[in-house]
Image 1 (cartoon, rainbow, N blue to C red):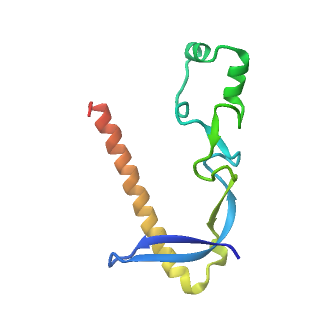
Image 2 (spheres, rainbow, N blue to C red; image 1 turned 90 degrees about the vertical axis):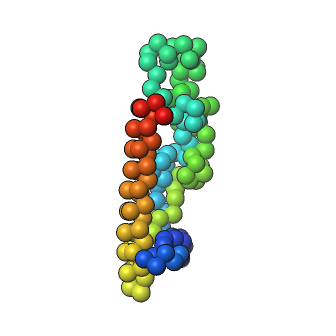
Length: 129
């Protein structure tokens, strides 16, 4: 049986590490392709003019849209394996379900805090900081 470790901090600020059953799932980040567009190009929206200027010939233009092509790198999440381990909630032993629920609550709060931090950073950039 494959397992995955998750870590959270409880109400007493003690680190808790759980070893839970795992299953493999298609990587969301690369959608199972194992590669993503290189960091310098990712997230950039080219206008038609910019695209024509940036990619001189038809081969370069086609390579931009080809998964696993010359502008792609290994996925930073799955490292090219196409799948990632995730907690198999159906196989969690009853003795760990309460701790897993505590982990999910902690993880939800952490994700909300990180989203708030990103929003603050975006607002600060708009104000010129």
